[in-house]
Image 1: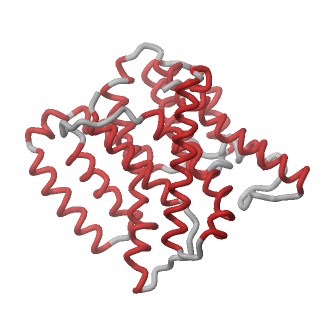
Image 2 (image 1 turned 60 degrees about the vertical axis):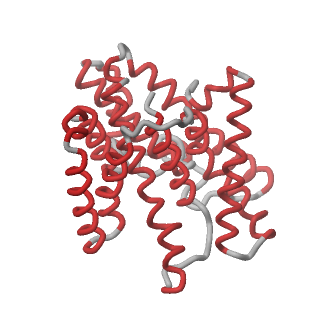
Image 3 (image 1 turned 180 degrees about the vertical axis):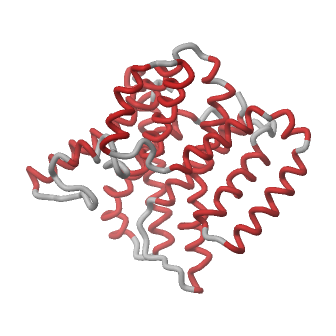
Length: 300
């Protein structure tokens, strides 16, 4: 196991957690540094996870027989649990307490088509769109590489009624991660030149484009700079997966309490992230204690 990958994964998910915090920090000059830290920099989190997914696919998953079965367990099932559970909570609050916690979806058939299957946009638990897209990528790989026509059962409805992939940058960066894995020896041999080249590219993009563009160069630069460093770290796969799956609903649920505790936007963000980390840690230890509950994090 490359612990450098685990470190990058943890950083990426922490960045994603910051994206979904609620705050009133704007882009004024006095607050620009905070806006950059809380709005722009965290956007490379999903980009890093996409690269990691492509890298690990070519290094590990591609050599495993029937890998799509393992992906159903590690991706599809946790995705469904994370979204269906939030859907049930939302319905209970709406029908029994007249509390509407949804801001994008209506209480009709779209709760299933969009809230769970995410045909045209993020599901009811928004950050899990990434898991949905990665699973679709694996379905496409299984279809074309192994000629598994059963994949059409899931792919055709998505193609006809919605979008195969919600965020195409996930696919492009997945391919980028796979290319890094394929040419790893050459990249490591000329690593300093890759770092210099990507640094120049990132600076040019930073000066001429928005974060939605320069995050690609920055995420590749960070990954190539770190992915093969030999460090002592931990296997954080299960913890980061739980944090990724559940940080958003935890932040939404805890925000009213956080508002009572502090009016300071920076402290509010820190409290929200801290609460999400505490809940994820609790769920992690529960899944370590009760093995059957590891289904929520793909049996990691």
